[in-house]
Every structure is written in C-alpha cells, then in structure tokens.
Image 1: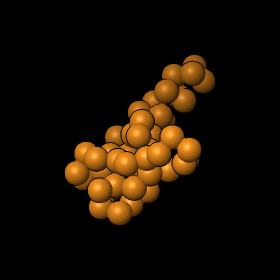
Image 2: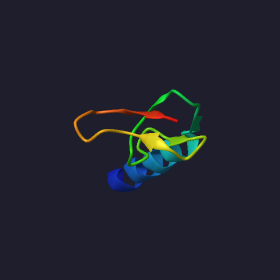
Image 3: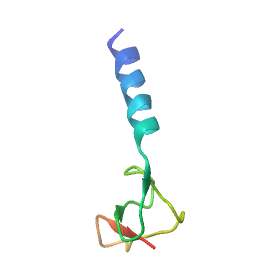
Length: 52
C-alpha cells in the first residue's frame, strides 16, 4: 500500500515538472525537469548544469 502511494506521488511530481528556461539549473538526467531547448550542458565534475 505504501509503495503504491509513493509511486503515485513520484509520478505526480514528474508530471508537474515544467520546462526550464534558458540559463536555468538542470541535470543531464532530467531529474530537475527538461530544458525548453532540450540542451542541458553539465560538466562531469559539477552537480548541476545550465540550460542553453
């Protein structure tokens, strides 16, 4: 039961993640949302990247 609720909340959170404007913080794996341009530049040594 708990797993189902947690899974549902995760999907709701993902569906609410909107597009990130140019210059915003992003992660290459898309965990913070997707860039409007679909281009997130993140160096391997940095925790976040920037939408271009």
